[in-house]
Image (cartoon, rainbow, N blue to C red):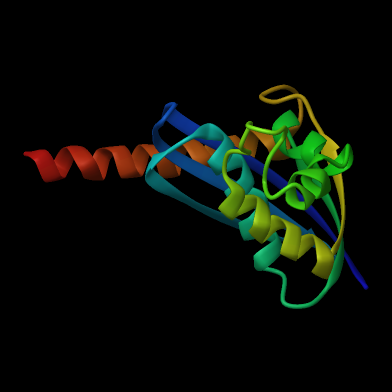
Length: 153
């Protein structure tokens, strides 16, 4: 299996609001940057979409080390919450629905294709890849925000 390193980040201008995500995939010394976003979203959706989009970009099953500054994302996978939520029909408790079940289901499917280790990093600190992903995410969000303003003029 190819070993790929992935860095991800999500950003939101307002929560909910205009959002973006960014990811950097690195394999054998080659790096690829990807980004995207939505006009009406949340920061957690953008964090999830960053990881999902990066994993979907891989053309074959890979061994992935995925760095994220989202405890929501890293803990859900690393601490087994994702598996438990899914087993309970996307509920954390009897009446407590999990937010973003559509994205968690997509991620769950991708985790069965790839071997993924999630590593939490402190956001907006000393990690240049995390900072670059943040820049990609915020730039995409800002471009959507600018597009929205132009449509109003």
